[in-house]
Amino acid sequence: MTTMVAVEFLSLPTELICHILSFLTPRDLCRCAMTCKIVRNAAQNSIHVQYKLELYAQGFTETRNVDSIDVDSRMSSLKRLATLWPSVCHASTIFEDTVRIGNHSSEVRDMKCGIWWMWVNGNIFIRDCNTNIKHSHSFPIHEQFFQDRLPRSVRALVVDPIQDLVVVVPFPDICIVTGAEQIRHIFSVDFLSASSLLPHPDSLDASLKCQHSFEKSGRYHTTLTGDPVICGDRIVVCYHTISDPLRKVRPDVFIQVIDWRKGRTKNYPLREDFAGFHLIDEQKFIVIDTRGIITLYTLEEHGSPLRRVMYRLHESVRAPFYLFHATPSFHGATACPDLEPGYVPSPESQIIVLKTLTNACPVILVIDMVIFSRKVLHSDAPVEVPWTEWGPQYTCCFRHHPSYQISVFGSKIAYALPRNVHPWELNYKVGERQALGSHDRFYVHILDFNQRAIARAENIYGLDSPTHFICKLSDYRHAPAISTRPYIVTVCHARFSPFCLSGLFLEHDRLTLTWLRNDTVHIQVVSPVQMKLDSDLVH
Image (cartoon, rainbow, N blue to C red; front, side, top):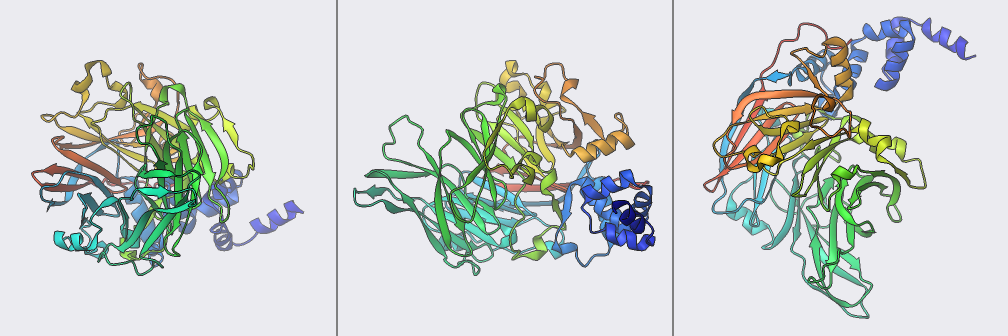
């Protein structure tokens, strides 16, 4: 019966076969094309199928912004993206500006969709760095205006320009709990519009009170372990409560899961010996503990978060604290559709970077997000996976220096390094000589871990191709052999001054660098010079 159906399908007109193939996922399309000559020929003759495969190969997914664009224009755009970061890349400045912030010390700064923002001493500065007027958005930057809108005492502040959202957490007050009181208000979260800093029109409550259940009476201090994380309608805040700040005991860590549009919040305990947290999407998050175990949780509609799988790290990358670097979230309803890029990294092609906070031998660990995909969510009982079964093929480890800046977007890392030094060539015996000194210039290296792009580069361009330089950790004699994952290396041949460098931000077609100098922030945006592509990208 199956053979008869297959024969009938293959006897259809080519145009109809192509139309049917367009409904398949790129992975299924590739499998069919590898096993059936008719399907392969049909796929090669359909620009719709070719576009879908090319999108898949580059690790992107399209957004609502490109619905009205014809397929030829989409394919042309993807071809330009594919040539953005060749092995040797020259860049040109496409935007430059200076923002005066007054006599303030540098605090939190970030960037998304060409919108740079910075929070200093209870004040916020937002600057649109897009050169395309169609994708530009105006934000008020008058200092006194912001001071009138924001709370006087701010503990944390984050911005999501696509949703026109500013999330503000004022400093928590001391909470006094008596024997009769178990549930108390510990801190508030405000939801403002980035365009006006007025209450966000889509939020049910402009200010939401987060509560916590205390088991014992006492005088408690609430401390946030990091900034709030926004992913669509969901905001997650990590915190711990301390009754005696002088005690040298690690406090239990909790999370507040907030639906900011509906005005609902719920707290949950994290029982691990907490060392780091990262929200993957609206349904999943990961927690890492000091024993070097990464635990994947799912957030259910009702009930506590469920453990799904635990990954054990190699001994050399275990630390008391970690920082996560990852692609910004593009989930949620779009309040500013012109800011939304046409293509965003697909979940299957993203990486996260885990940075150890240790003085002995700091490292960064690149982790393929595929290990947190839906395939691992079917197990009801959590399974602990040893390093040997996942680490060597899904990770890549580098030495790191505190002065080096890194940024993650999709499958790529932007890495600021002195001259042409590779991460494996760092020598800790010379200490500060390897840091970004004030008299040197540094280059930005782009490391791409998209395995589909690497496989295509190996098959089409060759290992020694000037277009794609493929690197493996085994190529370096002094590298600890804990992972075998290859990656593509790009060196951006534009020299930057490390003096007062305060930020490095990577987006798929641009690099943004910021310097904090003399009460101002200097912003420079560079983009790689386009290369001509003579042959088709899709093979």
